[in-house]
Amino acid sequence: MSIGERLHLRDFVNRDDNLVRLIVICVVVFLTMAVLNPDRFISTLNIDSMANQFPELGILTLGVMLAMITGGIDLSVVGIANLAGIFVAFVFTKVMPAEAAGTALAGYLALALAVAVLTGLAAGAINSFLIAGVGIPPILATLGTMQLFTGIAIVITKGYAVVGYPEAFLLIGNSSLWIFPIPFLVFVACALGVGVLLGRTQFGINLYMIGTNSRAAIFAGLETRKTLFKSYVLTGLLSGIAGVVMIARTNSAKADYGESYVLQAVLVSVLGGVNPAGGFGTVLGVTIAVLSLQFLSSGFNMLRFSNFAKEFTWGVFLLAIMTLNHVQNRRTSRHRAVRVETTAQEVGNEEVHQ
Image 1 (spheres, rainbow, N blue to C red):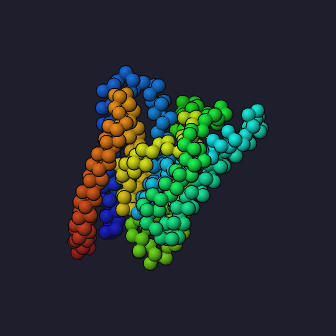
Image 2: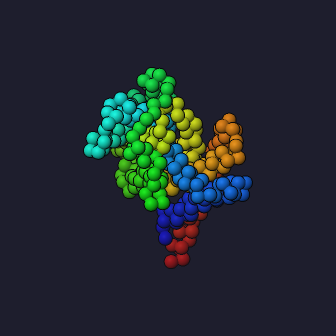
Image 3: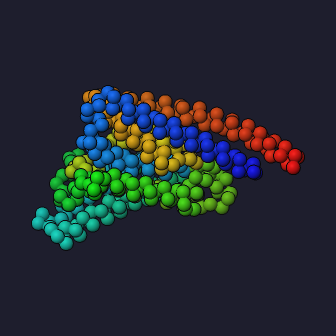
């Protein structure tokens, strides 16, 4: 067995250990909340409610993960989602006639979904231009566009919620196919799509390479700007989809909805094993992490924790996980250096004996 094969096997085991640790955290959170409130937390009603709630955060987190894999971040995902949701709401409240039905209603539903997608793509393209084109650091560019998109949403709605959508549209956020809520199925579709993109395409490989070492990626001949442009456009698309799920579930579009989702999306990404410095992150890890946070959030609601207490807990949780991951990454780096030397010696000894 070669040095590379041995190192790959050992690195795979280490990553599996991280996944096991994440699963343990998820199970511990679930059991803790179940013990504290067994009658309500593990009820069918609550499980169905959680399956309807977490997809919007999960889809936003997938977008944040894509940005973090490249070594960047996107703080504008909630602003994009809210803006897309408001434009969709305007299609129903200002464009669609009240008497629309049948084929006409289906046409307006398709138009609304197209508006959400186009809004996400356009907003993502603005981020991409600022980051990949102009060269502004992602955290500054998306912080600015977050304020921009939220400001546009406030101006066009005057700060009020936009309500009143057709029942056919509300089915997206409040109905089920067999036992699976449609928001959950939308999340699964997005997760599978992103998973295939990252694991089975050259684009996904390029994202990881840029996050691992952007300078080396340039020297390797990768079109880093083009890849970064596509990644933030894709993040915008996912945000637009999340916006549709959000307003379909709540029957309301508002400029400041889900403000805490930015912190939660970053928390879920880091908890799910995404390296904030770039180069590593998996859809499976993020999925388990978002479930953990949903269990925690639902449990807090049943225990009647205030929103301030939840924000504080999430902040502490984020700092603790980042510290743990940083220490783990340093240990892994040191152990890897030792393994390279040890493995080389083992292979050398085997060759001598042969």
